[in-house]
Length: 235
Image 1 (spheres, rainbow, N blue to C red):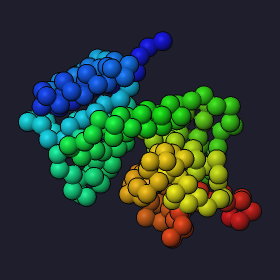
Image 2 (image 1 turned 180 degrees about the vertical axis):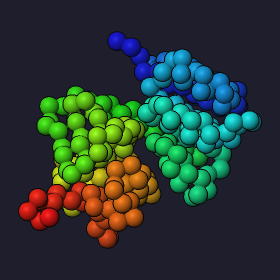
Image 3 (image 1 turned 180 degrees about the horizontal axis):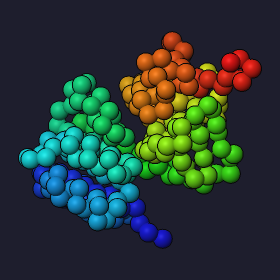
Image 4 (image 1 turned 90 degrees about the horizontal axis):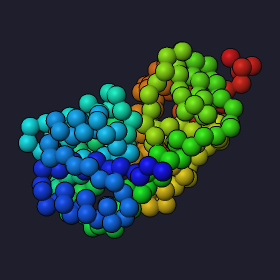
């Protein structure tokens, strides 16, 4: 069975050595890159299971690496930075990252994030016998893990798919912020509403006919979100 492969990208040699050694001790396979260009090359050649990506690097920064990776890959990405303002956190998620962590971080905290992101990817990629979900132009195959809108395939990251799956499997029900965070991200994320709001925004951007006036994923102020289960007779 192939080991989980993690690509560690950072221009600080000490951090790369420390993180790599600890990850290998936990049983992960590790590959490394010291700059953005090398990171993209290693990602293409090695097809890692997860990317730990530093933001501040000379030349191509982590934001640009993330943006380019998302053009062709759904690999989970955790962004790392010595200073993350709120706007930077939003930018990380907006570019397609799955999580972020501020330096200096504790080893146990990093390991918990790695495990959580890998767990979400595993759940999202798990084979299921659930029948396809269809709502107007939106079609979801849980078996093939494929989403199409008006016949055109829409690429979703593992976390985006996991969130969409939870919403559609409970279509018509109002799901609280806490429920969605715990179900999709894990218990340790139950208060991280910023994650949920940003991923909902990303799903709306990719799926909604009019993201400014969503008809699929609607907000229930102060409570959570609901995937509308509109009966044909209502139209």
